[in-house]
Length: 255
Picture 1 (cartoon, helix red, strand yellow):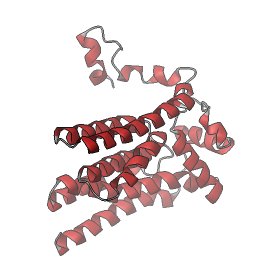
Picture 2 (cartoon, rainbow, N blue to C red):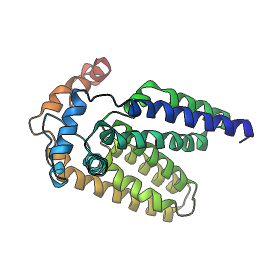
Picture 3 (cartoon, rainbow, N blue to C red):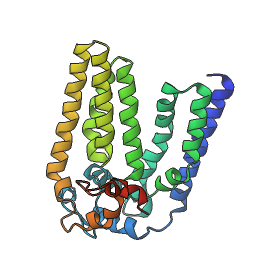
């Protein structure tokens, strides 16, 4: 990168960080859903966070445990509860750039970073007491480590394995990102005729899958005992199994 591009990169990283940190410093009050999740974190022991949450809430247990550690370390105020999302939001800026520059030119990757740094939803949720900021970070970590593994970078597996094994405990949608990354790694190696690396990536994907199965058995299968969240989000998903073309298009019509 040229000197001007490095300066632009630094400006975007600082701007994105300031935008995410400003609401944290202003210390706004929790709104309803934040408060409901916060009560679960504050009122429960770490072991109890593995069970169904009160107040019709659900969140990845890894995120809840990080939140618990934050309030133990920094107190029970709003800033302590928002520390983990803020950390993930700021770290995602640099991680996004690392992902973007793998497939884009320096100028294009800076443009992509500008869109990412200034995107209002990403700025807002970086200080929301919910898991959304962490989920962005986990998705980027999976894509970044998978890209390094594709490039046969030294020690890439040391980051690739925990990205998926831990990621599925920190993020609900991480299993879908991991599935795509794992399939890409295995097929790309297989099609190049590198059976050894394909087998190695298949073993990594199996470790990710085993971690998700454990998470599902211990936490996810019990996370919505009253079916509230299933009913709440029912209009956002097509019927399973779909019985008509209308069922397949139902999700696109959801508000």
